[in-house]
Length: 289
Image (tube, rainbow, N blue to C red):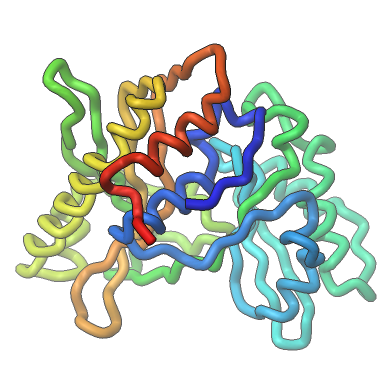
C-alpha cells in the first residue's frame, strides 16, 4: 500500500479518504472509482484543470480529511474543455455562485478557487480540519447512479464493538429520489436494506444481501486488527457504498464510497501514521508481491 506521510493525520487518519480508498483497493473486496490525491490545485506535478480537460466526464472532488459533506463538489468536464461545478454544501454552493468567473478561463478559475481558497468559506469548527489539511483533496470519477422506481440507494453496513469483539449489526439504506448535483444527498429517506434490494432485484434480493454482508464481514476482519494493533480505538464504523447493477451479469455490485468512523481515539505519542502503515504491511491480509 502506498501512503503519503502527513504528521497532521495522527488524530484523523482514519478519515483520510485516500487512506480509505488505498486500503479497500488492496483488499480487492469492493469496486471503486479511479481516484487521485490533489494537493492544492495539482495532481503531482500536473495542474488539476489541465488533467481534467484531458479526461472529460463527471468527477467528484472532496476534501481529503473532510466530513459532513463540506466542499464536496461535482465537476463536469465537457468535450470542448469547458468545466461546470456544483455543490450540495450550502457554503460551497454560495461561494461558487458569487465567484467572479472569467468566461475565457472556461471554469479553470473556479477549479483553482475551490481547491486553494477554502479558508474563505469554511467554518473550521464544523469541518474539523487543520489549516494544513484544508486544501488537500481527493478526486474521484463519479460513481454511476443506477435507479429503480426513480430512486438511487446507498447502503451503510454498521459494525460495532461488543464485549466479544466487533460484530456486523445490519444495514440501512439511503433512498434518494431527487437528482443529485454534487454527490452528497441531503434530501433522502432511510429504509431497510431488504426493501431497497427488492426494488432493484425482486425475489432475487436475498443473494445480493448475502453478498454485501459477506463482503462487509471480510472487510471488517481485515480492518479491525490493523486499527487495534496500531493502538486506535473505534466504537463503531459504517461501510458506505452505492447499490448498482452489474452490466455484465445483471446482479448487484456495491462500489465503495467511504468509511464512517464514530468515537475514534488514537495514541497521543509516537508516529501513529507510520505505525498504522507498518501494521498493515505485517498483516496476513496485506497484498504480497
